[in-house]
Image (cartoon, rainbow, N blue to C red):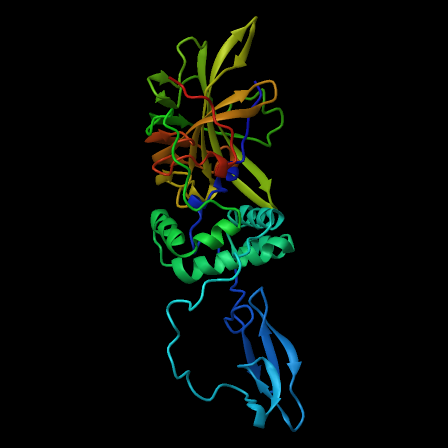
Length: 388
């Protein structure tokens, strides 16, 4: 039977999974913390702040007479008001309301720039370190770089202290809504699809093997290492009481295997446990649906309780899917799991170590996900029709 592998990091391309502090881009405004169009004098050098937040030289006000005028953004003689830096604070407070209505509608980025910004974010959201995050921005399409940095700086300046995804989302809505939408990201989720129950099932988890397989093993399709002829997840999914272990299946097979997958220049490692209904066609066993897949990254693979979640604070991911067995590809997603998995025994998983787990998760459809509404478009995944 062919094994099916999915790179779980595909699932973190939504606003709800990002959290300031996980992977920070170096602040593009660190050289002066400037605003586009702002002027300053550096000695007799007149500098202007560009759209990327960096100071650039506009004019060298050298000579005996010219003086740098940061207020006017020119080189002027002293008698004309030239100055190196403002000598006093402004004498009046800025007005809180504009005195006139704007004469033109605010400009919006074109679709190409929005798409370019969204692609930078998709790359950035998967990074685990600054080097990766900076590479996503620096290697991104220039059309989207300014939009991304404007959005990111707004998040950093206003929402860095948010400690939960809910707090961060509320902060972004309140302070950075326009900047985020300009990057092609939806700040608030679409309303949930009521044809999918808010709670889309629940599962109990129990699995134990003395050895797990390794996806790089020779002839691993014929190996029985890491395989048990029993369900590791039991319970229901959908709007009713449909079992994840179909009664008409010949058997339910569970298997665990260590994997290494490369994506966006990063190598992801971990162990994945899959549950497959097996049917008999002729004299051959064939895979059925649904599959339950639990993905545990290597850095979470230690004895103790770990959280299963789509959010970035999750340490593992669990999902219920249908597979097209002719292509060994996921055809649609039924649900994702939120809950706790307890690792009670684990060996050297890269070298066929043991694995034992148990726990409980609540299932949610991407169409009506855990109070966040319809997030399927942000995840970029096809969703199965409602299961009644």
